[in-house]
Length: 204
Image (cartoon, rainbow, N blue to C red; front, top):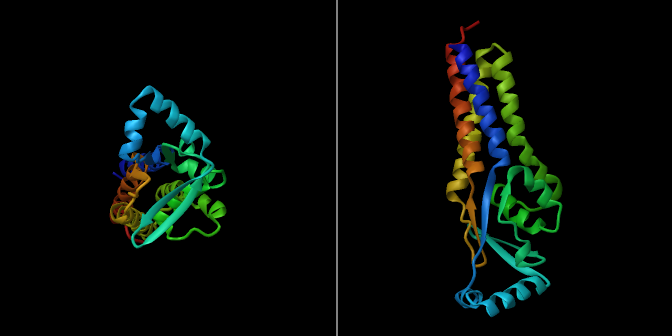
């Protein structure tokens, strides 16, 4: 039974790693009705392409509860359509940094030193790997219970953030992607498996 649990633990770890490279968010530009009508014609499409290509900077606003995150982008064409976990640090240190600011704000509530703090997203797959190693190598009930509770806490916090964050604004619609859902469901599974492993281990 313990071997079966360990096998499922590593399936959970693999799911977290897969979730890290899948899209965490999908980003759509909300176009006003006038612009939609403009793009519906060939002449309008050409004008739209010229407009979006020539805009010096575009301001994007993402609301988080009563707070607002405002950033700028070179043009509408430069807004990425989706962002995975592995891309967050890359974007945070590029010209799209303000989009990363908005995404990072959704889960941390802070925007200071984004370039350095964005690498914290690697903690999600890193913690999953550590949990997998601890549950596999260390034969101690307390460790198993501790790892299980920690993983459940990560999953609970993640689900709470995903379900309470308002990601809609006038310019952008940010949809939570399958990568984040898979990541936190995998953490929930790791938490349950950790507790189960602790229950089935003989007390010392």
